[in-house]
Image (spheres, rainbow, N blue to C red):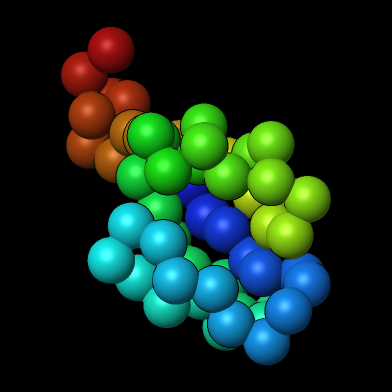
Length: 60
């Protein structure tokens, strides 16, 4: 999952979305790749961790 936070200006419109100052929004990978080079944004990628249930672990 990818997230972007506007860190300059009060609002910014891109990709059909309005970004507000200091409000994090979920974005697509393509939007992440575009915005990571924009100094007005702070972006981050969150890894998805798949946890095994206890029942699944018992069968391993």
